[in-house]
Image (cartoon, rainbow, N blue to C red; front, side, top):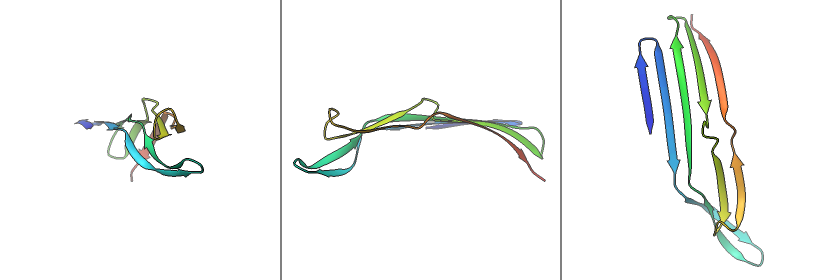
Length: 99
């Protein structure tokens, strides 16, 4: 889901994503056999704000993974974890000059 707002010199964008549990592959484990590899459900939120000072200069700030989402995957059942991934929250500021 994406929300956008533009008014005069201001632009705001917020993007929320939800991904339900899904089969992300299979693994062949010695002595056990082939097991399905699942990734747990997770959500993700990004946002950006831009201020256009004039036709030549814009200031912006952007936030990525604002919710500090942790993605977890497992073999067949959650009791058999495979990995845990954390993409840190990132905040980016920028100045854009156009000529």
